[in-house]
Length: 198
View 1 (cartoon, rainbow, N blue to C red):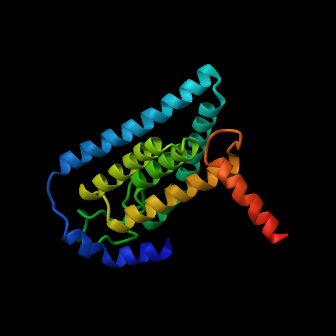
View 2 (cartoon, rainbow, N blue to C red):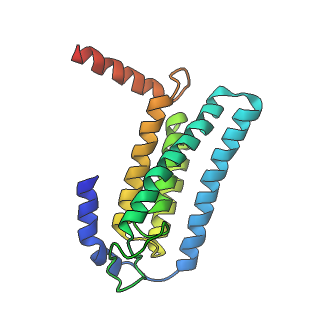
């Protein structure tokens, strides 16, 4: 993650200079639709689980909520510390330590939160179509926010990586292996590792 972020930081300005600077409104609207679709789907799953006492759907909603809280607790201090300018701010170099607020460029918040949500959903329901929809929505949000010049490439890379890492950690720490999810595969792998160590 650190090596990838460093590589993108070094290449940020070159990448930014080689992307088209048009259709910002279209990219923003596409990002908003993809984000709303993913968030709405997750809210629907949680409400369904809560009202019908469907245990798997309820676990999905609870783990999504915990993942979003964990993501927020990491995202907020990083934003305050980095204080990075967006591509269209300042001298256009993406300087750090220029802001003292949360709504800054580094790391990419939309990427971080959408990949966190998508990863939990894909782990809970590992069907190919569910994974394609959840990861597709996260990729769409990440790509369109970048193309709308809201973030540098390094912002989006680190945001995506952190979102996935937080989601995977939260999911595997609290998932129920009784459900048809990735939890079973994780439990099997963990048992093999424990036997190997012993």
